[in-house]
Image 1 (cartoon, rainbow, N blue to C red):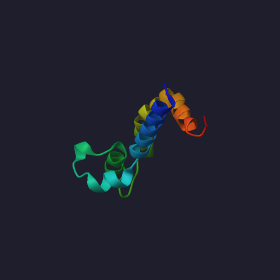
Image 2: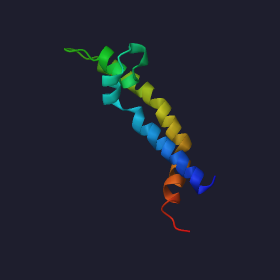
Image 3: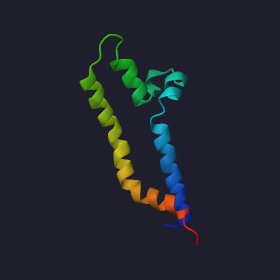
Image 4: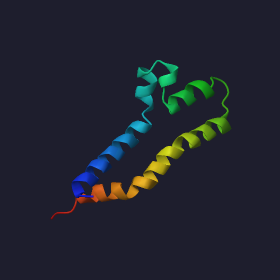
Amino acid sequence: MSPGEAGIVAVGIYSFLMTWDDYLHAATLIQTDSLRTLSVGIALRYLGELSYDWSLVNAISVIGALPMILLFIFFQKYMVKGLVAGAVKG
């Protein structure tokens, strides 16, 4: 993979990571329940006004974070290669 391709992959992964937990935009702009993100759905459904089921919220959060962790482990070498490709001259 050339340095240019590694840089594009690194930017794509970084953009995906930044939009993965964007709670504020998803909570205010998406009104349909079926289109909401996981974090907004957890907050609206399982976090009540007076009581919380923290074990259920934590279990759903861990299951929701697993795809991101697996993607990061798989693409970590491309991220590092893309980030250092722009820092080295020549």
